Length: 196
Image (cartoon, rainbow, N blue to C red; front, side, top):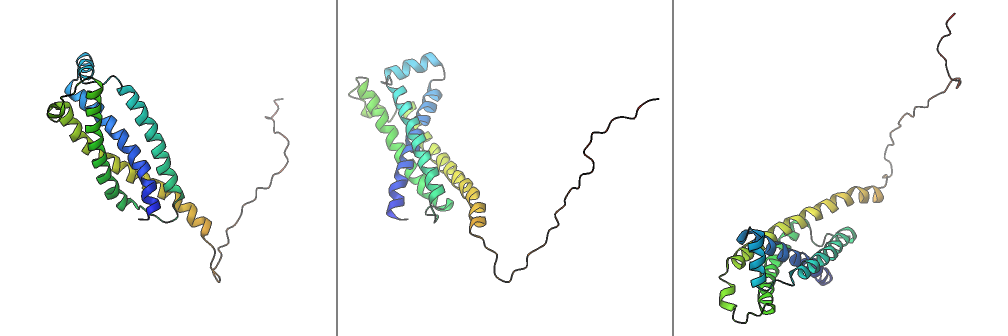
């Protein structure tokens, strides 16, 4: 793949990874603490007071990244990342970015919450373990969605490109199609028969 395409792909890969981290984070904490008050207490104890800002930033990144992905998919003349290559390209990068991003996010949340001796406990907490496993599942799902979206865009583009660039070869036979013309008679309105 060309360097320009790889550089551009970093934007949408990073954006999708940010969204994957947040979605998996939310699911992990819901699995560990299904009861809302218990979950709020757990998130408060682990320094999640800025989590709504993280969710908002991830949503903005996702919109920008997917917009760039769709724009690139529409504009690219040669299929730099065909759907088959796209899956392997995306799933490895998403899994690595999301797992790393999740651990960094959890560490920063605990630092913001005032915990300074969390390194050993971080990797043994149920929310962290569920979160890491969900990052891999989320990366796989996101890669499949990107492949489906790319295929959809290619399908939409293909008929237009064929009709735009198609020309009738010399010596080809044109098929005559009859055109029906309706001949109208008297246009005066017709009334029901009069009774005598």
